[in-house]
Image 1 (spheres, helix red, strand yellow):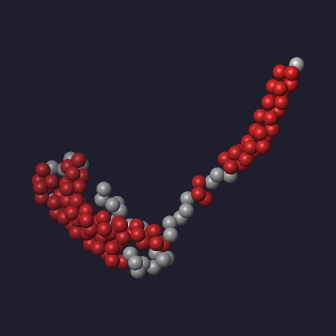
Image 2 (cartoon, helix red, strand yellow):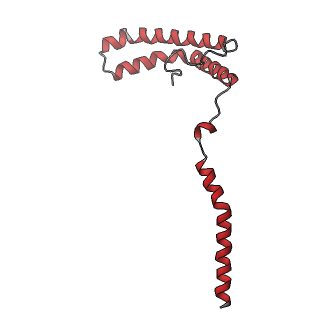
Image 3 (tube, helix red, strand yellow):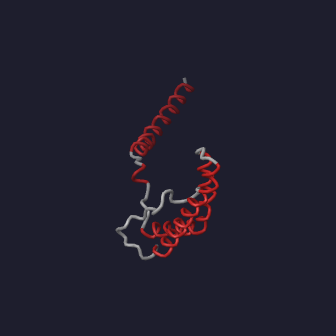
Length: 127
């Protein structure tokens, strides 16, 4: 009889502990909202992103030439197109990407806070 009463006390103790702590975990799980947990970027972070994107575009603008050639090759363009047109398109895109990078590098600190800091080019980064 003594063993039965000791096991009953243990069961009661476990039930009390679960009764105290279980609602807390349920309440935390129910109140989780990922939209509230994601902190929106500050203006300083947006400016640094713009500077980094500009620096990347300046340093990797030349890569538009082989990327354009590869893209046109995968599209199945003929050899004449790949030799004559693709380098011109790649060079044009390289100049555009590099000049956009220079623009973003020099304008990152003076940007108006109401301006969205979205990329000028798509894709924002070449790689």
